Length: 71
Image 1 (cartoon, rainbow, N blue to C red):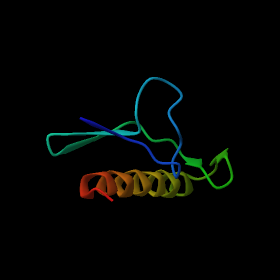
Image 2: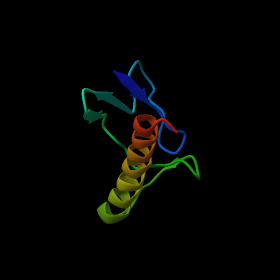
Image 3: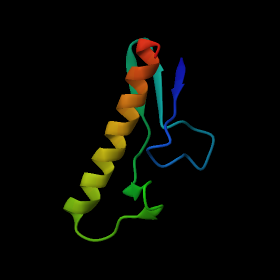
């Protein structure tokens, strides 16, 4: 089991990882609309918040694939 962490998404505030890779499966924790560039939670319309959530998910997935590829 590999813990997945990236500085490009909100760091967990507890004893859990942003994601965990186990036996070919990736389990991703809940993702909030937090903009790591500004250090602020994104408020406003749901579309803006969801864009931020998916950007954070993209960062976590990129980190997971780097771990799997060994780079």
